[in-house]
Image (cartoon, rainbow, N blue to C red; front, top):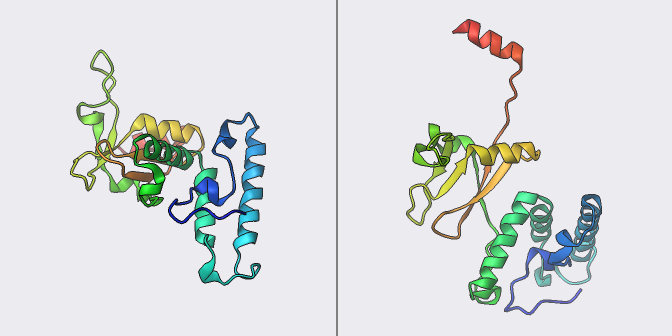
Length: 197
């Protein structure tokens, strides 16, 4: 494995020795998953302190970095947010070489966000109807509704079998991972609920 120059932070793709075009290469999802797992295991073995001859302090990649890279690239919503970050970093002219790569995303539960029924003036269709519920959280950049999650975002994630959404601030480059649980209520539960009321 070749070492990256110290002035260029390594991306998750570099850490796992993968090409960023892997996900658009035409491979099936099963083949992509298998390739990710092989790269993850190879990286773990090549950087494991018990398996390498170099001391842990001189190793350029930690086990935590490898695990974070694998987790990010194998989770579609996280990979999408990460790829967006990479593309915005390179297209804005800042380049990854000039700034330290920030891989941390704050994780928060949906219940910790402020809920507003009907969207509070957002999410209207052309007729001004069909407003959806929204959840928001102020961002440290000063935007009081910097992180905004719409009911349709949650529904889309749940339909995909994912229990989290990743949203970016409307005014800055910070990201927030919002985890949620889906409660399925069957007809019997609804009847009992209506009888109690």
